[in-house]
Each structure stands twice: as C-alpha cells, then as structure tokens.
Length: 173
Image (tube, rainbow, N blue to C red; front, side, top):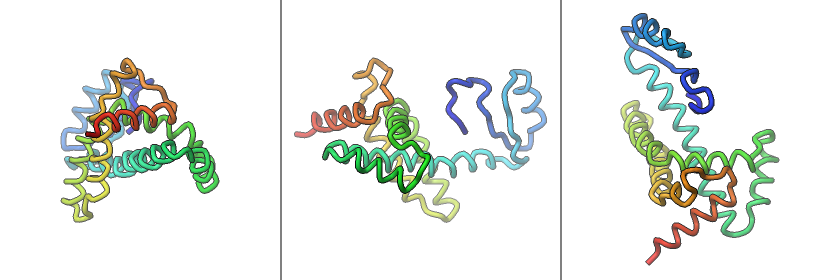
C-alpha cells in the first residue's frame, strides 16, 4: 500500500484469506508488517485495487496535464492554481514524484491497472478510468526513458516532461 523503498520488508502488507493465522506466523518470522483484513480470499487485493484507481489515476491525470503545461510554458500557472485549489499538496514536488514513478514503474502499473479495470467491471462499477489510466501508464512506459536517465530518472517534472515530449516527437513519422 506504500512505496517499498525505503522501508523494504517493513512496508505494510494487507493480507486476507482462510489461512491467515499460518501466513501471519510465517511472515511474522520475517519481521514483516502485516495487516489482517479478513478471512475472505481477495479482500486485501480488492482494497489495493480500489486504492490504485485513485493513486495511479491521479498520476495519469497529472502527467497529461503537466506535460501539456510544460509544452506550452504555462506549468507555473497551472501548478500555482492547483496549489491554491488543493493547498498543502506541494504540487510542484509531488508532480515530479508522480512522473518519476510512471517512468520507472509504468509498465508494471499499466499491467496492474488492466487487472483493476477487470475488477471494476466485475464489481459492476465499470473500469473506464482504470482502462484510461492503464493506457497512459503504458504510453509513458513504452518510451523507455529509464535508459535515457541511466535507470535513475530525476524527480523534476520539467526534465521528465521535456524528455517525454522529446521521446514522443521522435516516434512521429
């Protein structure tokens, strides 16, 4: 439910299912932080997937918006406006972190969001946002920008936005 780095094996893990006691005992020996949800198979995964609709969806919306804003030279105004509307979010920093995560983990996140879309459909909610999020995450992943940054992309939204724009332009016929 949280980034694995820097807490590594201490990152909280949600678990559910009929063998909870056995899993708690085994994983507890590894000094892992577990949160038991229920003895129903899938409850922990459902929580993770529903949360991902919001987390990865916001990243995708932010990427679309900020890449366009950087392209047009209006990023300061857009981010200042977002900060006024949603104070305390630290949009300039958070936007860089979101883009960095997409560059670094976009392929895995796109795969996850395709599964989330199926789950949303199965729940009767519909997975339109999850499907769109998967597509945006995949678009960024397909640019293979990790190579351009020697596997260490910066958390600077302008640098990442410009790299995404440049890579997309290079793909145009």
